Length: 249
Image (cartoon, rainbow, N blue to C red; front, side):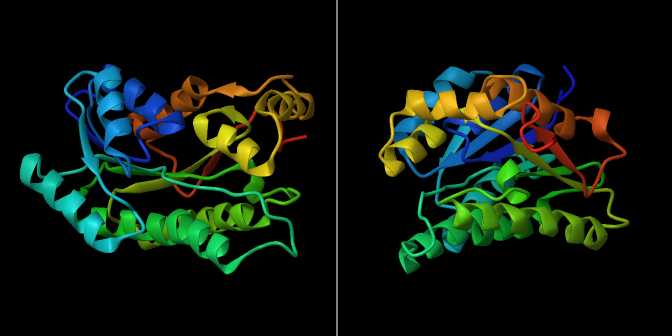
């Protein structure tokens, strides 16, 4: 019960890495709040998480909805111990085909949404609190047809570096969790947008990865658990890669 009596908030918590992390945090004793845009997916996730998990529907790209989310949490529990800014999107678009709508959508959720998720949640956090930002191996690698998404993740990495300095003296830590290729509905959606079979795409990712496979979301959640717990009490401004070696060799 490494998170006993902790309050955890996970954006994008209804599927994939967010859901796997919510299940892990709840099993370790945390009271978990998840957010997402689709109520039906949130309801299904809460049933799967159990342990009294709560879901609040909302879009992190809409600041009034973030305000409503945090007002609800403030009213119900009055604090946040773990803030996992995980919501994100990505579309395939090579240079020459990038549209303003794709750019605004990715940066609106992955960067603007992440910034204000953290900034608006900060007043509910105290010394000992921990902020986790979802990055990606793409933030330090060139990836064909994925430059906009990759740029959003590179931005997230620098926010963590700068915020570690901004938070100096508060006792609040901020770190980046950067997965490699992971079996999630989000990545399957990337395959669909690229017009390729998901099995072929995952096979290609496995071939590129030194461990020879893609990750299960529970493996990324295990690293999120490290950053959420006091086991990482002397870590801030760091980036933790859980990528099977993809971006390391």
